[in-house]
Length: 225
Image 1 (tube, rainbow, N blue to C red):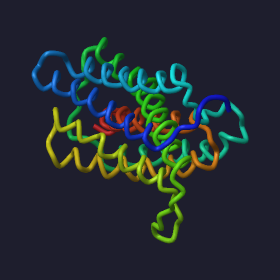
Image 2: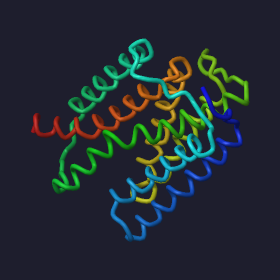
Image 3: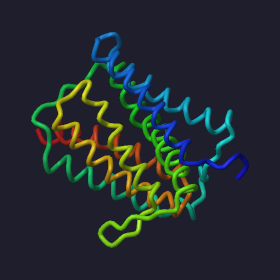
Image 4: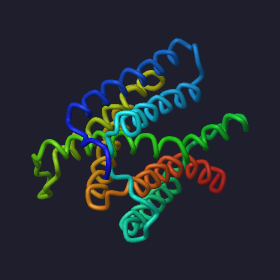
C-alpha cells in the first residue's frame, strides 16, 4: 500500500477538523440559516474533504478493501443481523405517529442515509482515525474478556461523542442514547475492520443500519395501523 504511514497525530488533527466543521454546520442549523438536510450534507461533505485530502493530497493511505467475497463474508452476516434486528424493533415497538416529509425532502433524506453517511463516516473514523492510532500505538484494552486495540476503542468513542452535535436540534436524552449506541456499533465495526481491512463492508453495514432504522418504523406504522 503506497503512501506515508498514518500516525496518531494525524488522527488528532482529523478529529479536530471534523469537530470544527460539524459544529459549524450545527450552529448554522440552530441559527436557522440553513435547513436540517443541508446541514447534514454540508457536515458530511466536510468529512469527505478531510479524508480525501489526507488520502490523495498528503498521501496518508489506509486499507479500503474491495468487492471480494472473502473479505465481505464476515460483513454479510452483520448486514443480515442489522436488517433483522431493525425489523424486529420496528414491528415490536411501532411508532405512534408518522409524518413523512415532502417527496423532494424525503428523497434527499433517503439518499443521504443510503449513500452518504456510511461511506463518509467509516472512511474517517475507521479508515483514517482507527488506522492512524493502531499503526503508531500498540496498546490493547480488555473489555469483557476481549482484547481490543487502542485505536479501535478510541475511534469508537470518538465516533460516539461526535454525535453530540445532534444537541443542536434534539434533546439531551435521545442524543446520549445515540452516543452510547454509536460507541457500541463503532466497536463492532472497528473489530471486524481490523480483521478484514475492508471499508466497503463497513460502509454498507453503517448505511444499512441508518436506512432500515429510519424506514422500517414507517413501514411498521402503515402495516400495523
